[in-house]
Image (cartoon, rainbow, N blue to C red; front, side, top):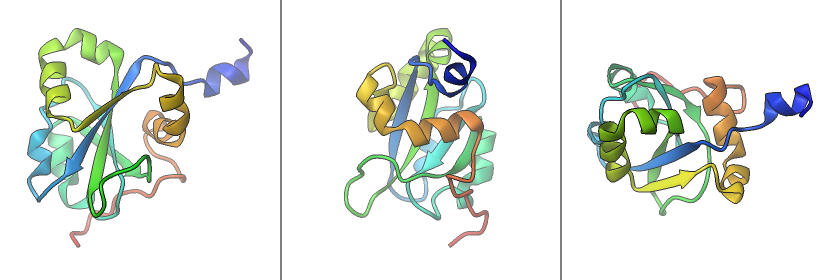
Amino acid sequence: MDRSTRRTAQPPDATVLRFFVSGPDWVDRLPVAPQRLTVSATAEGVLGPVTEALRARGYEPVGVIAAGPVPDGTAAVDVLVPARVAATHPAWWSDASGAADRGLSTAMGPVAVILRNLLTVHRRGGTAAARRPSTSAR
C-alpha cells in the first residue's frame, strides 16, 4: 500500500450510531462516553445549543454534515464509534447501541462509500467540508 492510500483509506472497524433528534432533551439519550468521541448533525441549530452538554458527556461536535436519509422534518446526530471502544467498553456499547435509532458498520463497503464525507470529517475533527456548529441558540 503506498503512502497516499494509507492516508486516505478509512479503517473498516467503526460504527456510526445515528440518533434522531426529538425534543430538547435528546442529548440525554447519549450515555457518557468512555473516551472522547465525535458527533455531527444533519441540520443547523442542533449541536450549538447543547455543545457544552455534549462535551461534558465526552462527545466533541465536529460540524453539520448532510449524510444519509432522515425522516422528513427530523434532524439526526451521528456518533463515530471505533471498534476498539465498543470492544473495551461493552456495557457502554450496549447502552449506546441500544439507544441509537440506527447503526451502520463501516466494515460494509457500501456504507463506507455513502458515508465517506461524514467519516472523513469525524476522523479529522471537523473540516471546511462541514459547517461548525453555532454556539448561539436559535
